[in-house]
Image (cartoon, rainbow, N blue to C red; front, side, top):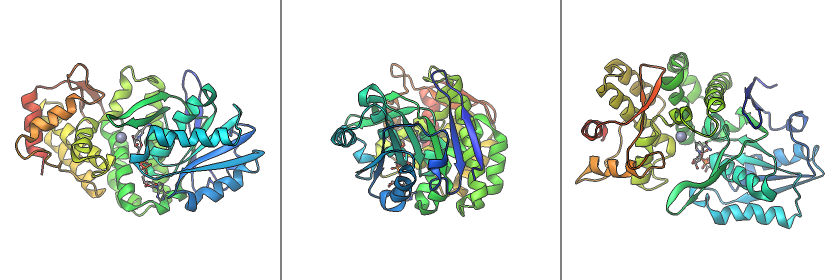
Length: 365
Ligand code: NAD
Ligand code: ZN
């Protein structure tokens, strides 16, 4: 029933990303599931009533004991306190190091479960069962795990790879439209940085994706995972290349932080941020105006914002620059932008403040 299986080859461990519809129900038959004495399903109060029972039922065929811990839903709960609820559950149930954690949910659940798996008894196996488009095409693949600190997003975490990623496309049926669009921003991202064929395909299939056509979703998830797997495989710990996955994210993070987290979804900030990064690339002579126009049009068709918000009525560009200088990816206050060096090719570089200010002035609503 699996429509695709994308391998990801890494130094410490390689694993598979299974993509298809209704994979959740038959998961126990998956040979690649890690064996263990128990399974702990980590999910939240939105997803548990939708898919919790189905996952527990199938895992009961494989594990002597299957427990569930239900966390509160929301990025604001991606905290140390919530993480501790996972450890509480593991210890209360007397779970040993042969326990397998299952992350059933979006990127928040995936990041927290992965980090818990990295820490519990210095490391237990975990499986990603991503249920948002963003998690299926991005966060569940590559082994970055983290929680937020009041002073910064994703500041506490570890590189820790899952044993398997199972993308059940059927779970996307219940995803709110706004969350689906936010996931599409990360799919679109892969085009300009790596694959203009994917970009052209997206131009032709955007309506099908928005209608949640299974075949279209399968292709988008598969191609996205292939690109992410290749990039991460070449640069597991983000020494260089992996940073290209942050196309649109430098401006996007400033939007998210400047608006207050949760006002704009991550993908929405990335969408407007990609337009800004493309425009900056144009001003540096790397791409032409037609490319920027084409990217802007595709983002709009996905139902995503193409114009960034004004963050400060007095000195908007100054506020953006200030926020981008404290971003995790900045080095000694120098902002490193992911730019498009001709369609399908990314490059990392700094840019003169005056040029960046011009882009911000032009791109903000
Ligand atoms: P999310 O996990 O908050 O999910 C979005 C919302 O959709 C939540 O309310 C969730 O409960 C709900 N939901 C999830 N699946 C559903 C379904 N099938 N049906 C109905 N509702 C559903 O957000 P997200 O966009 O999936 O992930 C964002 C997080 O991912 C951020 O914390 C970000 O830092 C992280 N992230 C991590 C990486 C990485 O490499 N580790 C990459 C990108 C993003
Ligand atoms: Zn992102």
